[in-house]
Length: 209
Image (cartoon, rainbow, N blue to C red; front, side, top):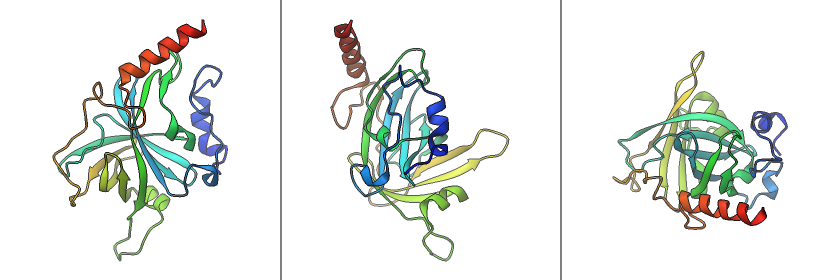
C-alpha cells in the first residue's frame, strides 16, 4: 500500500474536485493483476510528450519522455522523472481540465507487464527499487507495442534537474520502429486518437450543461 508520502506531491498538485485523475489509495493486492505493470500514456499538455510509468513498490514511478520510447537500440531517449503516480493512473484516459496541473488530453498508448533484469557486476539480482536508486535499471517489457529489453540510466542529478536516458537493448525485439506521431497514435484500449478523446470529452461536457 503506498504511504501518504509516496503520493504527497502528486496530490498536492491536483484539485480532485476539478480533475478526473484518480486520487490514489489502491494497494498492490487490489490492483488488476499481481504482476508488475507498466503503462505509456501520450499527454497533450503544454508540450506533447509520452509518460512512461513502471509499477514499483505500490506506486507508478514516472518519467516524461519527450520523443517517446523507441524500438531502435541506437536511439537514446531523454526521460525526465516526475512525481510518483497512483496505480489507478494506469487506467486513466481522458482530459485534464484547463487551468489544472497538466491540463490537456491523455490516451493510453501501451500497457503490459515487465520483469526486472537488474543485476550487480557479479550477476546477482538487484531489487528493482534499489536499481533505480543506484541510477541504472534493466527490465524486459511485455506490452502490446513495446517488447524486449530496455534500460533506464540516470545521467544527471544534484543541483540540476535530474535526467535519465531510456534505451532499447539490442535483442531480438530491436527494430527501426521509432515512436509514432502523437497526433496519429491510437489508444491501446479504445483505439481513439488524442483528438477523438478531446472531442468526446467536449461532447460529454455539453450534455451535462
